[in-house]
Image (cartoon, rainbow, N blue to C red; front, side, top):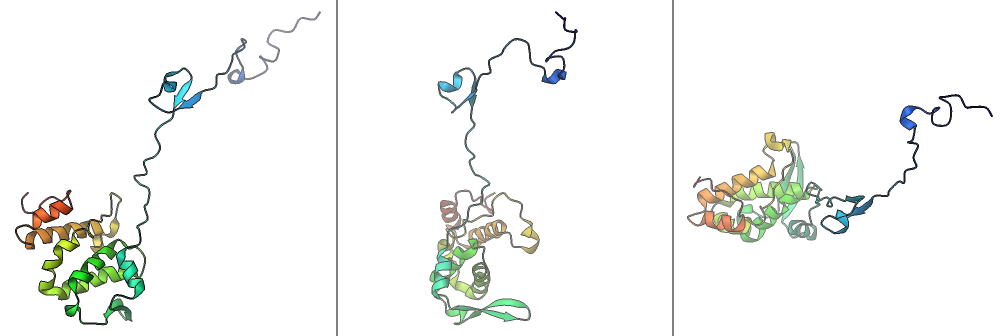
Length: 201
């Protein structure tokens, strides 16, 4: 009988990190369990975490009433091209529009992201506010719900162009409070509970 040389054999020929202990070990399977259950307290159990809340998940906006009215051809507007770019060609005089009907619809269109809806909504609001005069003040309570939009916590580099929706909405609500009469703040706070007064603070 030939004795094996010391240092030879299946264990010694393998690098140290791959060597297994000489005793036979039984591998235990770990089971996955929900938290706060009896199973979660057992040995060899891994508690799975909660599902993602989706706070930063992009949520597509639902089609707005503005889009529906535009596609039906209910607005007296058309797209006009000139050397300076696009603008709205109004088919009626802006001053003769029913502001109680049209202005809230255009504000509703502010959350549209696709052309031409977003262009018509923004430009239409600019035109109507510019020519509205005393027709605007009575419509203010109807405008609060459509402008409860915000751009969220994401970084938005459009501040330089004054196109950040969240900032524009804040400015608009502050203008409503300043010029909307003595009950303006109460009405805004009722519709937008997170609003902080620009006059009381």
